[in-house]
Length: 216
Image (cartoon, rainbow, N blue to C red; front, side, top):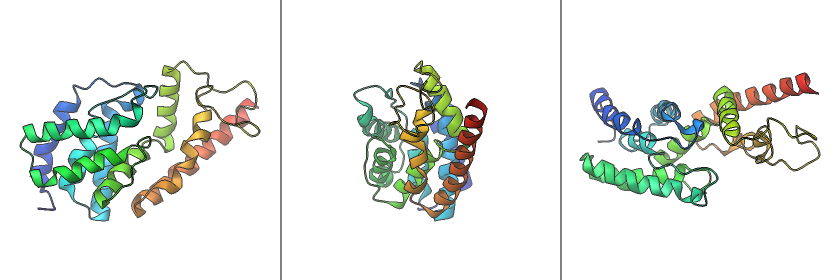
């Protein structure tokens, strides 16, 4: 039962999407479109890496089914809260129970802030898919959206590209590239994700170079 049929994928995705559409996003970077992009990447990586779609698909759809704001003291618990809620939902929907423990782990481990080690291929796939949405053109867009939502300036007034100061993404949006995003490339765990991450990382660096040329 490791491979879902196309019909099963479509049937379960209808159930998952109907639910996540009702979730209020905590910020512009974690809306339904983010979830759909993560699902798309997770399905691609799942096929390439030959992971178990019965685990990957619900974990990707429900990884943010409980959302906690980035500035909340509960932020590091968000993925655990989502994993617990996902199991409640999947049980209600009569999802095959043998997959629930692995789904729970994949959701818990997907989070950057939770810092939980992935213990299965499926967890690696889901983590890679979620992390991929922080890179490339979409990563730039999400960073600008979320940073603006917090009311942060685009760049810090001194040393805006962090050559001689410690970056602080609470002070300026662009600092987030230096505190987190430019460090992600080598953190991916599947080969297919590593290859895509390298391309997206290069695009972000080119964007920053162009931005600096236009500003300095």
